[in-house]
Amino acid sequence: MAESTRALLLIIDDDRASRRLLTQLLSPDKYRLEFAEDGASGLAQARQLSPDLVLLDVVMPGMDGFEVCRQLRQDAHLSEVPVLMLTALEDHANRLTGLEAGADDFISKPFHAAELRARVRTVVRLNRYRRIRSARDRFAWVAENVEHAYLIVDQNGRLLYANSTARSILGLRDDHPGDSDILESIQRQFRLQPPETWCSWPNLPEDQPLHLLRPQSENAAAAWLEVRVLSQRLGQDQEILLQFRDVSAQLSSARSVWSFESLICHKLRTPMTKITWGLSFIANKAERLSVPKIKEFAAMSQGGVDQLKGELEAVLSYLSAPSALPNDGGFPISQLEDSLSEIVAQLEMAPIVPQLREPLPRTLPIARRALEIVLWELLQNSKKFHPQQQPRVMVTLQCQAEKVLLQLIDDGISLSPEQLSRAFTPYYQGERTFTGQKPGLGLGLSMVRSLLCEIGGECGLRNRQDREGVVVELLFPSV
Image (cartoon, rainbow, N blue to C red; front, side, top):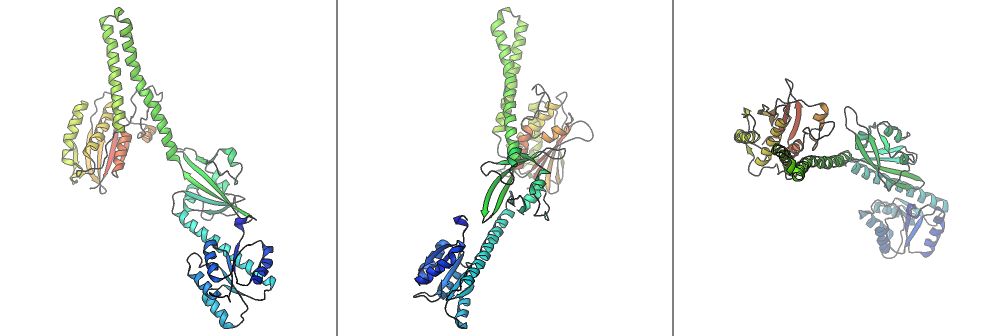
């Protein structure tokens, strides 16, 4: 048996012969034995060692066993350590004094070997079970109040414990039988990654994260769980603790960053190609080109410059988005029409007169610059995706369930279910061939959502029901 798993007994007795006899009698049971020759040193060792059992002589010079027991019971860390008193005293009064001091039992001198070993063995076993139960109760309390999922299984893979998060994520019933292999339940929902490592279940490696994958379905996105393992041995038994952490968002974010960077390179490469190609023709073949041709190639280069400028401005706008939190009381609703007029004039769109449905609060809980960027992005999208780049946009503002709903309704194109579900992904390109020649949804909607979330709002997108076009809904918390 490993040294750390053997029960520790502290023997406090001033008589050397008694200590030797106890050593001989208890050695066959492989306990770890520590000794103290008086009450004061016994208390000091008890505080240092936190023993599984104290064998305490009653009659000692200075501090007797009764006082030692009282002080053990007054110590918060030692109050539950079992105490067996070693006494030659047989009268009722002294035993009553020992019980009042907090003793658990008495062993009379001279010792009866079989009785001594039986009592010590029983008390140690009960105390160890109590400690394990207490530790497990503390663990269960912690585990029930954290976001991660935790399972404990035995060396055969049978479920011993699952916190509520684990039962929810893994779809376990509260009455899941403890004599069945929990892996079977997991495999009904998840794929094991990497499968060759899971073949060693339940003896999984502790030095590497494993994963469970729930594939994407029509109703739900793919879900990834990272699994970490900790194994511990309790005597001859082994328990394996498994932590399940949902890393779907992190993996999705990593893929989004990769896609974003790849698409940025493509977006910038396309206008750069136009610029380089047009200027190289003019520089290398100007003497053989007619004036109209020179103008054509110059216009091509200018178009590339304009396109590059627009792409760079979009990226910089996304990276330097302002805080949406207002520091001046919020955006006055009375100024919404002026802001819309300024934006549509810059975008060369038809005028917009917002429809205000009273009653409304005086302000929206968002910074002016943030709201103006939101409106700019949304109106620019409406123009970009309109077949003739001349949309007619309605803007409505009304209270809804103690919040304020701002809607922008255009008459452009409708979006597919995939485009609607991924519209808020940065630089999502709805075009299947990814040529970059058709407009993508860009960064705008992603930035709009982030700004709204910052103030506790929400952002949604849906198709119009009455005709082609989309409805963007901004839900602001009430001031």
